[in-house]
Image 1 (tube, rainbow, N blue to C red):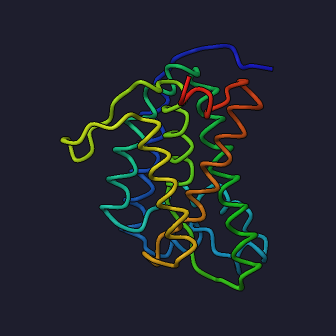
Image 2 (tube, rainbow, N blue to C red):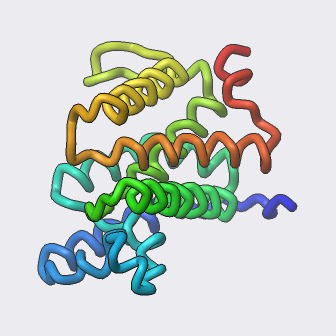
Length: 200
């Protein structure tokens, strides 16, 4: 059942929570240990990390670009979906990306910490491209690219980096899982096939 539409600009609240958490991390570094998704701790029962990891960040540039992307794409997606539906979409895709990443980490014997909003952000960018396939995004403020081309191109790069192991230290799989979660969500809940929307 669809959530009744309302537009409350929840995007500002999401950004505010991320910024507040970032400043807490900066002033109390030990909090990152409890907020990031760390496989060993999740196995010990720290299940909240599947949620909190997406509000924690590793540095100023990390949170800056994530929040900039969230604002640019998320504001329009929230307006289209409705605020409560957008919040559900954001949290559901981010949690899915975290759980899927945890499963892969365990299978591969990886104990790296996972943190950042990128998984959910990838889902938001996908939704933007599905809702506004004719929108043009300017890369570096110069090169015009249609939103679907940008999203699919970036996803292809993430897949390439994930397979080749290039750009180590970036959670490429989490980005891809966020993209997949967003795709499934749009199809199951909104009956929107992103592929058909991209090339309608």
